[in-house]
Image (cartoon, rainbow, N blue to C red; front, side, top):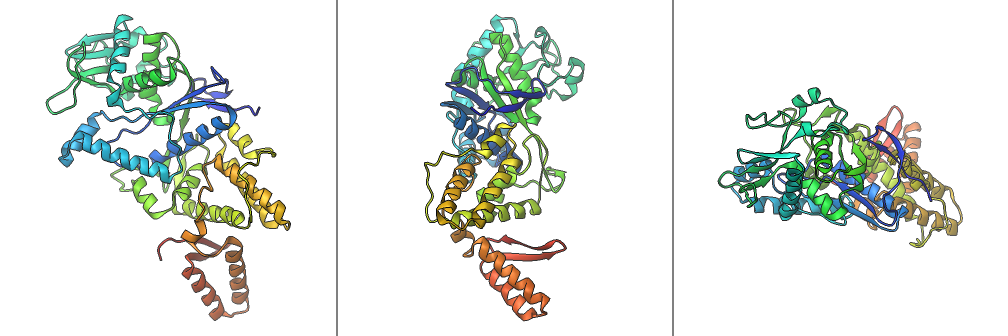
Length: 456
């Protein structure tokens, strides 16, 4: 069996993946806090970890994947108050939009998608265990984790206790034994969600939510915990601490973190006005275009979102769909081939290499003269692309344009010849014809490039 290699943030090195139970690989990814529409950066971990899920499903007989929904949080309370609607109205609305967008991105549903509000009992059970073990204490209606009691605190983020306080994002309150101690349970003011507990009426802290939900569905120790690099500290570090304090074991053996997404080489921010909502981008471009773009850089590296990236993704998908369009029959049962896409993904989820492998297959399709061999190559292309969640559509060219890739490139070549012969009238006619078929061309120093446009 192909060996999966993953970069483990816990050890800061590339490791061979060895599951606790090869009959049931268990994986957890931090899902959204459902207070507002997600932005394009939030889509990156969704797509990356969906590819990891697909890869694991190809390698192992069973994969249990949990991705939570945080539906109790101060941001949710504040946004509902701003909008003058109930918290349930807000969270139901955002979750519905989230599910719509994940479907458009071809993101598979996880095995379990627990909501925090339906797992309060599980959170209280873990908090009680921490209290019993001396890792938590009550103070002025709060329950807090006693950080200094855990000798290996910082094992994931590799930070010293002295370096943590500025970045801990915790309130330095007078009732804390130590500034680094973080909240497990806190009292609720009027109008804010509250549940009864042995520690008084209140609501959970953020970090305890993931610890409790992952334990319920995956056990006290599981294989993979995934999330964005921005979650390493304090969120994931505190999850690790809670698990050691309550159960005396490492929460997950492999910690996988994706890099940031920039927009035109700048970090997204309200002050710059460059935040692109996922809903906005998916109303403009097909979900597979967005997905392809998000997979175009290695998941650990920073990805720069730009118009050029979108154009390149459109062109690549048009080429891939153009190859599939040349088949007269595609088999869904083909398996007598070596999967180079799987090889690429098993090399630390190397999605750029995996995408290149798809393009190489499409190149073979275009040069193959035997229809039977062309059909076989297209069947392989379809199955390989499924590992990346691509080429799922049957109406690509009907929706985008009526010309296949070969026709487009032939017309561009004809136009270039007309220009060289100074037949500018014909060149303009070809440009206009392509535009009528939703193909926009642009002459650059490197030649003529083209892209599909949805709206003229």
